[in-house]
Image 1 (cartoon, rainbow, N blue to C red):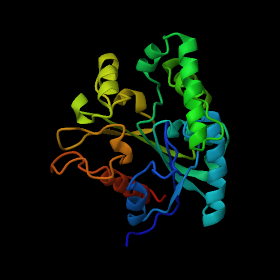
Image 2 (cartoon, rainbow, N blue to C red):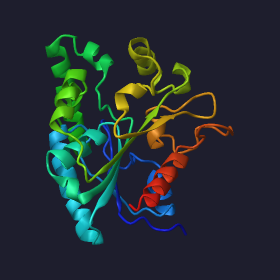
Image 3 (cartoon, rainbow, N blue to C red):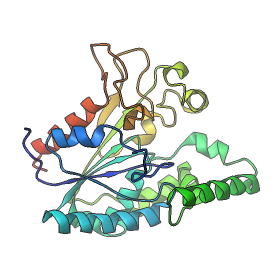
Image 4 (cartoon, rainbow, N blue to C red):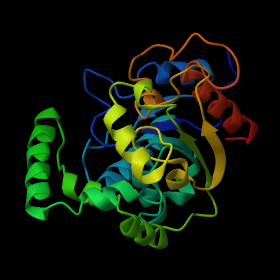
Length: 270
């Protein structure tokens, strides 16, 4: 049995899915973290909530976890937009005294040049599409979905404004990871966005290039050791199985990365 971490872990999910539905957002990851010595809790935020709304939900969740465990702080591991929700809770809502570390995976800290271009499409059309998505999200359990607010925050100018308003808290350790697919055929679910983002911004995980996600202590670009690389879906174990059976440099199963994260947090006394 692995030595337990000092502080529990909250997993903060990204855009498009809830973490409390019949299809879990995190696949085999919570079990792998627990086997490595981490006690895992889910954020319970809306799938398409705004950063401000989800940040407030996350703040309440942090307090619930602290009350349940008797711990002084939590570690947060966040994927994609979940990293922005977490930074808002820490910096704007004052949770920095209760968070030991924030690990972000493929979080658009610096926005997306691709989103800049896509949001040049007719605004009424985009707004209508977002309202349709909001309705679907309510059926899935979202209380206050706001898809327009969520995606517009991915513009590079909005990201810069967010970063200025949410500086790092000196009491929190920040680290980040980037990922890349090797080509559009690496993941059939992500082939089209990978192709589009690749045309605008270069290599990416199907949504974001490495330069968009660097924050705090950058832990590097995670690559698969097979032919397919690591997609935005692979990062959360969407397929519930190893990405490849290949051996060598890089990861063959995303669980390897999460175990490494736990070991790194343990080494820092978190």
